Image (cartoon, rainbow, N blue to C red; front, side, top):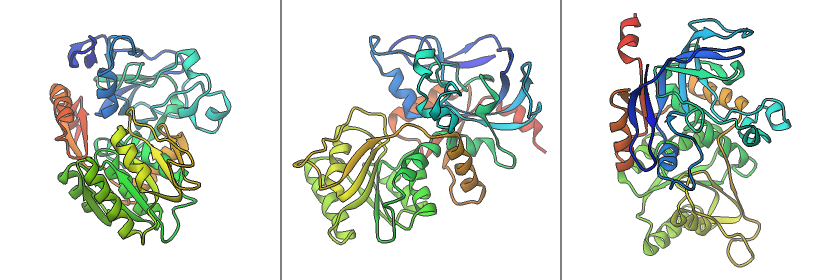
Length: 360
């Protein structure tokens, strides 16, 4: 089967032929219908050799959807042909966080060598994907796999981050989204769907700010991130918030310049959530952040939260802007991701020709 793999440190991903996996006991083999492209892939492919821990060769793709192609011995509750999404942050399934469905915070995954697909385990950018356990599959039912597959990360990750701030996102609150790309434009929709907050989007790209406004942001600010513009962004946010600042700031970039901006924007008692995979940090202290403000970094989301995200999509309250690529075009999708020219989220459709033939 064809697969897109990262094979050499510092190189670009390559399209190769590898054996089709076979479902063992408790496992499920999917015929992949869609796989999402993410900046996290670029992050790990940009790591130097002494920091790279994901194994080589690595089949990419931690956002996956597919139809069940084969069931391993002992798997019940699903049938061949079922359309499913893959919950990505696999855990042990037995520790306390896992018992709550919070496998993203599994206590033993690292020690046991359990890795998410595309981030250590073989990922979804292939014609077939082997899933370790049926509990990691969520029924898609009536949803389109191509437009839904980004919800497994680009939807779930901002939803999890925003839910943590729901107690402060009350009427009159102000939420700022820094970075209005793949995750950020979904965050804007989630904020509009489940909170009464005034939503402000900030990005260096005018196109991405326009996208944020198109999907529901009340205000959009274009900023290159230099000191003068950071001051201007701060002044504009305070003008829009009655001088208070942002109740909650969600940083989907994670660079030092954006975390510095988040610290400037946050109000007294406000919250900063760093979501973007970057080296930026926030210094919290008496003389560095407003009184009783807090900062945290979140990771992905829980299985119950993914079900909730799908319900938002099913009701039409959120959707993901996608650009489609075949598996042969996947290397070009990563080129465009690096160049910052993807509108919303890039999705690879490995079996595109067969899916067209199967369409009614």
